[in-house]
Image (cartoon, rainbow over the protein chains, first blue to last red):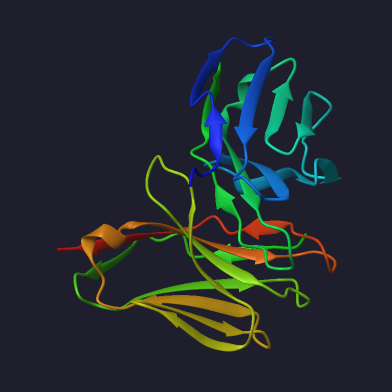
Length: 114
Length: 113
């Protein structure tokens, strides 16, 4: 079975540009999570969805960040406008329904904002 | 601020030895605990989870949980060079029904051949 799929794997952009990161969760998983990883702050949860509905977005750093999940097999994380401090690796993870919280991560998108 | 603390390392052990990785957490209400392995430049990979006090074994890995002491550990027996990676402790922090994971910053393990 395919795991979590993310695109692009690498993104280099200039400050002020819009960036869109994409994620396809594991088929049948009801939950989707967006994380950001930096050396300074480690791995941080940004937002998560259940059945395409945002449940907890308290980790979204500011209004420049937005996330959507239009259907069960696709989610986007958008940064507009991007800033150099947004440079990080962004991971998407998914988990099946039920009470257990085993989350499975995608390969990540390495974002560099110049 | 609900926190998860790990010694950043690096922790160096000789091949064949037992590696012991430790994690403490601040939220006494936490119910589930996870260990992820992350190779350099790769994504976190779930290797163990534990929900109840005591030990849980899976092959060469043993997770230990002590909720009274707010402490969770991972033991790796017969360490191999391929175990060299950063190990992330994650705790399910939040209200019942929340699936928010809080991660420690990880312990870097180096297994010396």
